[in-house]
Amino acid sequence: MVRPFEKKTEQGGRLPWKRLKKLAYVGCVALILAVIGMAVRIPRLLESDARYRLEAIEMRGLHVLKGADVLEAGQIAAEANIFALDLQGMASRIEALPWVKAVHIVRKPPDRLMVDIIERRRLAWIKMDKIYGIDQDGVLLPGQALPTEVRTELDLPVINGFEQIADSLRLGEPIKDEALGRVIHWWRQAVAYDADFCMNVSEIRPFDAESLRLYLVGDGLEVRMPLDRVEERVSVLRRYIQQVYQECPEPAYIDLRFSRQVVVGSRTTGKSS
Image (cartoon, rainbow, N blue to C red; front, side):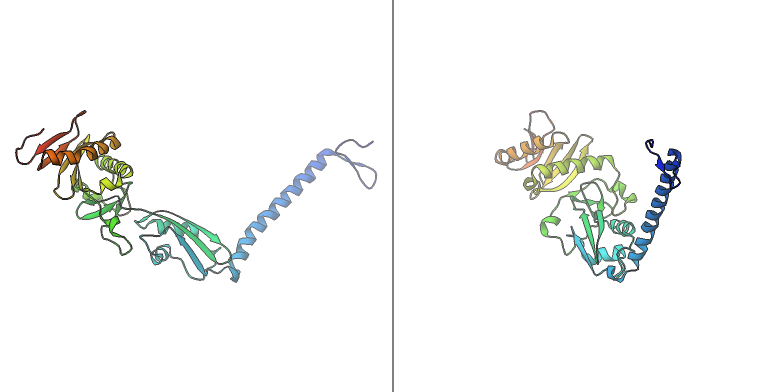
């Protein structure tokens, strides 16, 4: 009887289990080396195959930017072999554009690339040494309007009061200032809650560590607004603003910083009520 894991040789002998293990190990190593060799050779074969020359690029997510901007930034060569392209390097160069938040590039054999881009959007303008744009993450954007932008994307309030940090500005990078961060965070929540009403705001300024000032379109009415409970504060302002104009024809400011009170200052009397 032959024991398990033993095999008779042609001479009638037995092949020990240890030798079987050794042969199996050698076989596995040979197979792994063969696979590695194929993995090395296959990309080289693909990179030299004329069928994989780049013929077209599909781009998604472009609004502000144009395709030519992406091609130039990524240094994408026409008719290059798609398997010879450094996709990570291309993506890094495209992400260096101030308007680009993220980019993902994939090959689509035999002759295409797919470029997915997430662009940044202006949340507001900001006055520093000059006017710039700023997005919801506090990233500084170019101040000039682009031909691809529509009016509603340009009709945004101006954030003032941060001119002192203008020395360390770099387009495409976040502005590191806690007070500005609080203002942006508040405005982002306000726009998400009631974008239509926020279109009435022309200027935003910090007031103190716990509040800010909004200036409304038209008469420049000042609204002093706490930084907490954003949805509640915007809702109260919207609910009472018509009443304020009816009861105080020339209001100087509306102050919502006091608990359960709406304080209104008058331009004519100089008093608050």
